[in-house]
Each structure stands twice: as structure tokens, then as C-alpha cells.
Image (tube, rainbow, N blue to C red; front, side, top):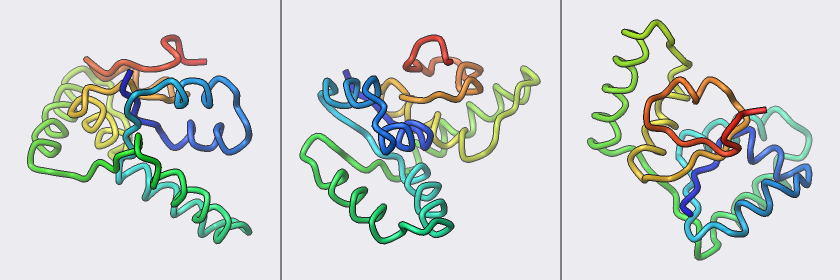
Amino acid sequence: MKVLFDTNAWTRLATGDEAVLDVLGDAERIFASVFVLGELFAGFRGGKLERQNRTVLREFLSQPTVQTVFATVETAEIFGAVKNDLRRAGTPIPLNDVWIAAHALETGATLLTFDARFTKVPGVRCWPPVVR
């Protein structure tokens, strides 16, 4: 399985969530969206363990199964379609989440998230399947 992790999944991983660790451990490919990384870096700056958190993240990103996903023209096209579809359905979500959803769709990865609003995005597969 290919997995793209959301910010809240990283937070759960950092606090020792066994289920998240199992999903990431079983993944053949782990995608790290540059938009999730931005959210993480913003959070790190607001905390007391910024240096430690950056080190842990850098080590995680250097693993051979982990690939950082950057925004491309294809990402932007998917973003535009998702944002428009959500607007038309009357179910908008925050812009960063639209970008993260676009990366999940672009990579064909399951989105590892605990945020129910991603279930509003057509085509995005979430883990856990029923968001808690």
C-alpha cells in the first residue's frame, strides 16, 4: 500500500500510536506532502522541542521508502478540480487540506489521517476508513 500521511497522523506517530506505526511500517511507499511538512515546521517553531522534532523528521524523510511530494502543474490541476467540486457541493475544506488531498489523488496513495473532512473529497481513500 502507498500512504501519504497527514499532519495529525505524524503527531500520533510522535506520541507512539501503534496503529499509525503499523500502517507506516507495512507501507511499500510513504509520501510526505510538502504542505504537510509546512504545517509540521510551523508547529515545530511554536514548540519547545523544535530542534529535536526537526531531527526526527529529517531522519524519517531520509528513509528509502519515504518520498517528499512537491507541487507540480498536475498537482495544481487536481487542486483546482477538487476545490471546485467541493465548492459546488457546498462542502469546502481549508486550502492546505485541498492541496494535501490533491497530493493523495496524484500519488494514488491512501491518506493516513484522523480528520473527517477529507471524507468529503471524492476519490480520496482515508485510513482509518471510518475516521474516528
